[in-house]
Length: 168
Image (cartoon, rainbow, N blue to C red):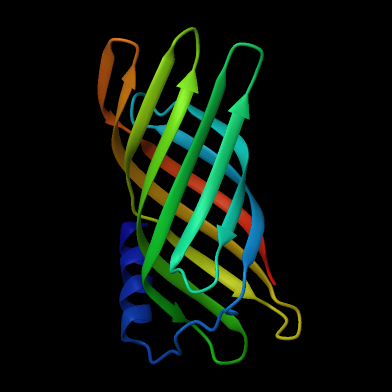
């Protein structure tokens, strides 16, 4: 599996593709996320909002999760280092980014967590006349968490997201 992923990345780096053509306006969307932490790979899912402001090269994500005794909110921001179309026919491509996250959690106490992310994803804008983008990404993260009197390192994990973004 690793060889296939490396081969696909190598082919996409060497291919002559166009840089991605996304609209210049606002990008607003929703995504479903599933994350597994590095500590035992325990996971949970949630919904999140996606935002891309005009003229600012950061893709934002806002995630909130809560139950009767648990509340968590986090914000992530990703800058796409590499972004390339894979075909000339439709706007289908991939990206590699570098990002950061910060969040708060309450669960019988209070905590703060933050760290870095490395999002890798695929996107498609299937209809040129309709500015809708469908994307999915895998983002490993590494950070530190403070919960009451406990410091946890490494914090973070592996996050998978799939979403849709509307360009205005």
